[in-house]
Amino acid sequence: MPSHMELLEIASTVAQRAGAFAADRRSHGVSVAETKSSPIDIVTQVDRDTETFIRTALADYRPDDGFFGEEGDADAGSSGLTWVVDPIDGTVNFLYDIPAWSVSIAVVEGGVDPASWTVLAGAVINPAAGELYTAAAGEGAWMGDRPLHVNDGVELDRALVATGFGYLRERKERQGRLVAEVLPRVRDVRRIGSAALDLSAVGQGRLDAFYETGLNPWDHAAGALVAAEAGARVGGLAGAPAGADMLIAAPPSLFDDLERTIAEFWEA
Image (cartoon, rainbow, N blue to C red; front, top):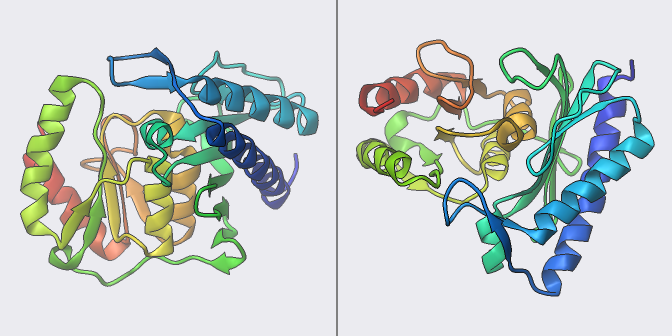
């Protein structure tokens, strides 16, 4: 099996190439190709084309590995490794030309269920900002060539916390009630629109913490590794692992207070 750093090199190279591909396509205009869970849960043709680009590029490096992307069917592969890909995380930002969207690529061991996998390496790139976040398990996290570390020692009432919202009305209503309770208890709340960038920003110290419910595996596979390798604790509620029910990423000194606040007010 290749080393984690060798896998990171592949993830980083392909993410940068895919980011340039998507940005070039964006410069020629973009429109909605399809909707998914609701009329506002959109897919663009660039999402699909970028995923195809990534899948082909990864197969050139690692033809026996599995592939699990947002826009296509999962392929288990035969090597025991699977690439978990979000071709464009922040599609609404991408559609509106808001410069906060990303390409997220992670490689995992143990299948496509986040509860059973181990993330070995990951890369998240924001092409509009020219920022590349990378991490390898046990090796650390970086933005470019700069090592990352979370903002430790921040109290809850001084924390800048990011979150996101789903596309189904009932879930958004519950998430809105939760953020209304969180907001008065923290410094402020941000809703940037890309979970992969939010998680990477926690690792960078641009944000103090992040939480969201309803995330898919490809939304957080790479970004959560960046946050964790930069010193964040990443988990769910009441000791559960991070996943669709809830994902929280925060420095260890902040995690418990934020988790208790969310648990008190979240309507599962």
